[in-house]
Image (cartoon, rainbow over all chains, first blue to last red; front, top):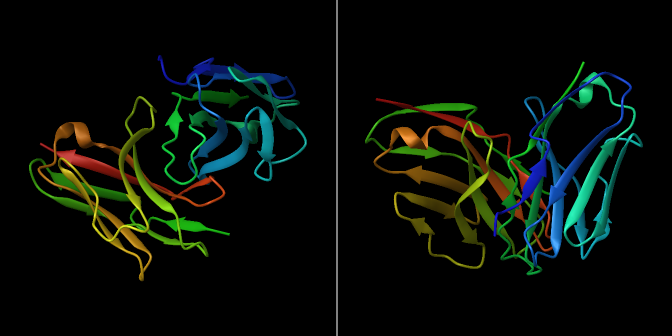
Length: 115
Length: 113
């Protein structure tokens, strides 16, 4: 398996524009996570899915952020409208449906810059 | 709520020496898993080592080992015979029954040749 695949690797956009980040989890994994990494706040869990269903989105900063998982092999994180403070590295991760003994496999992240 | 704290923002070690990275955590769960992740400049998050809370024996993976003190809620990472390739950000993480990974703020490790 190629691992968790995220696209794009880098995204530069203007304030107010819509941004869509994409993730392809490892085949067979039942959990998918979206994290945001910033210098100030470190790694934060935004939302996670189990079997394509959002389980906990309490980490989503505000209504400008939305995430979907239309099928087991694809997820998107959308920011509309984007703001400079959204600039961060966004990670997607996936794992097996096994409580506790769960190694999360991470993608290489998308570096988002909002100017 | 669970928290993970890494009190050392930055550490340095001489090549071939040993270094210990600190991590403390707080959780109300009795069963959980602890992890150390390595993030090199490539940004990839790589699992270094994992510890099950119900196991008293400290986990070991080659040059990497942990000192798990459950009562003190401490989970430090020891890197022996440090190599230049060990230079990276290291994140301590806690996974509880809710299957949510909570990360510490990270420690940047520099390895001096």
